[in-house]
Length: 465
Image: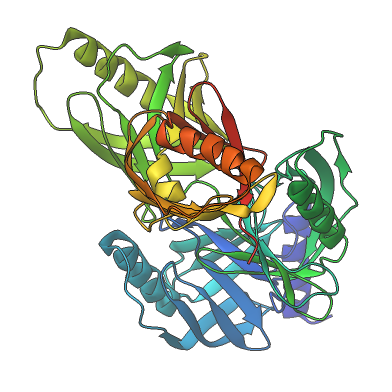
């Protein structure tokens, strides 16, 4: 044995004695995998929104938060070397914070010199060994709401009714709501393929159109073969690669108004609002001051707020001041959220809670509905929801709507045509129009719009085109 060979062998033995072995930089080949950005830079700053990276036969692509991008990559699994080149993106514009983050991300891709894959984590580093970008499983710990689906054997998409949710737990469990029932299943991802087991479901009943949607939704679960992920949308696809269900994140872009603090009605009539902006910032109006900050999701139901700052106005309204102080104290300690058709509940680890109702005017704008018992009777909202119009049993009508707190509304300037009908039609129309004219509250339940004048209640299903 040559001396140099003997020396190298001895070195390996020494490393083995100390548990290190001969050092290898070999890494798995990422070809066919997709990843979601978890942090940028050595400080592990969490990104706002969803940024993705896919590897496919030398082509790197994904969503950079606002735009999509693509380029080429070259790697060596033996030593973990990786470089990206020719990265080009679309030219959409978005909020300044997201655009700045996008520019940072794309610039960091150009600095990548090596990669390391460990379990469900991908780390990209520069030439000096500094961590630039850290990625994880793109579905794990995410929560979504259904926006559209294509029933089996159909080609036309159906818009989702009610709040249908899908949550990918880190341990491989999957859960959610069909809008009527809750369900549980398991999920397994391999590259871009996705397998979902047959869900187990509770046995509540609901309106027929919601039961039909639930049946379609659960049936489609068994057809899921893969997924695609962009900045604001998750598409589940079948074996042919066709999208069969589309989802969007539950929280971003929603607005709410405070109803209760720690289970008790707030002690002021001044509205408190909360808006989750798409760029990861939060804004709103407290009883006295306006405020802003940053929101962060963690797992399927984790939520925290940071950098919350408010204006410095003062007020002689003691209830408003006390409510605002209590609101900000709890908001800064929030750890979890729960969303239903009609509410958002924020809680902290000490049992404190904030409960919100939707800003109904925002949710109802541009929607159309049909009476649950008579599809010919309709109700539609203008794009800003300030006006309603529709068809009664005989006549058409229109009116103006004013929105107050917690779904409380008032109607004015009600007018209708003056056509005649049968006695039964006219009696039904009078009862219908009386509720509309004296309307007091709007709410949602089981995918339906519920209107009440304090005495009688009307139920509407989403209008079927």
